[in-house]
Image 1: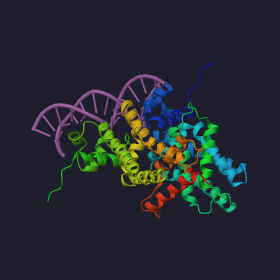
Image 2 (image 1 turned 180 degrees about the vertical axis):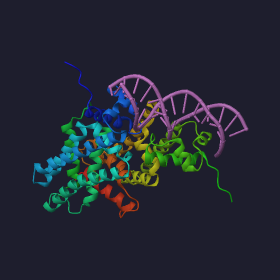
Image 3 (image 1 turned 90 degrees about the horizontal axis):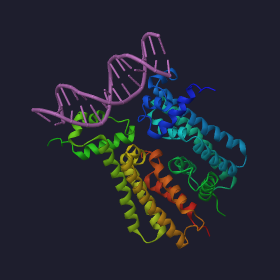
Image 4 (image 1 turned 60 degrees about the horizontal axis):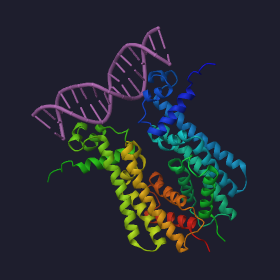
Length: 194
Length: 194
DNA sequence: CCTACCGATCGGTAGG
DNA sequence: CCTACCGATCGGTAGG
């Protein structure tokens, strides 16, 4: 049994951790090498540039969220169940992949114009799944017809994206209850109360 | 009429803008000098260190929010009016001081342990004003007795803090309607519906 | 506030 | 993946 060689995936994963913790500009290639037990210069056997690493981590974040949305949409035809699945899926992504998520949410601005634009487009696409679901819920009569859908969507995603900033997995609130609390808050805020 | 000399306040204000835009580690003292039309080394006539600048900007952010909370509490005895004033005040701080707010919210982690701890304490103090107001609203019968107060508080602040991330002052939504939309969302989510 | 620097560190390369 | 570097840039200082 031998220690496995360092792979590109190892490098990308470690980069995600450090970028999330110290920021892209706060992380040097030598820091990253140290994290993996090798020299900074050795990383260039696996990647073309530091920005290449940021691109890879951010792309993972984008993909995780998009896959989660796709699964939520596939899980039910019913808007309220879909919305709940979107919420649960988002929380799962945040809690299961904190490094990628934090880098995706906070460090994408370090990308230069073109790449940053593409990330913003992916976020918009993800957001549009929430918007469409809320719109369906209104059509359905479950959600309040008076809602401003784009704003309601932003508020829901604000709550979901902030989870990364405060949630402590070792705290008293477990994942199930966190999802339940968010879902209940959202339903109360958006529902058509009879 | 002469061009005013650069003051320490000018330097701190420019630092806030650049830290907000590119991040603390993404901003060099030479960048900052250029912004003010002087050399990076000249900044040391006004400040002791780069971190000194971050401390100053972050302290401004903390103070703006605390002053806003104090004013909101003083504005009314009635919990629902207070909550509305807290929301309006928070939005005002975010929209009137975007650079300080963004630096306060996103770059404080670049401070080292001791200073960072003190900032977290100031945030907790600010958050506790929201918590107390929501608790009063429950006691009052205006807000739902079933609420998890700390979580409800986090959700409200998540929405408020995210405003910095998406709101475009040049967009179609003016400040009054933004505040109204957030307040309505929050009231719907937290209220005791009869 | 500028000039002229300092040592340290940065992202990255050549060659093995 | 390491060794030995490169030029550029970093935060900061001395002296005026």
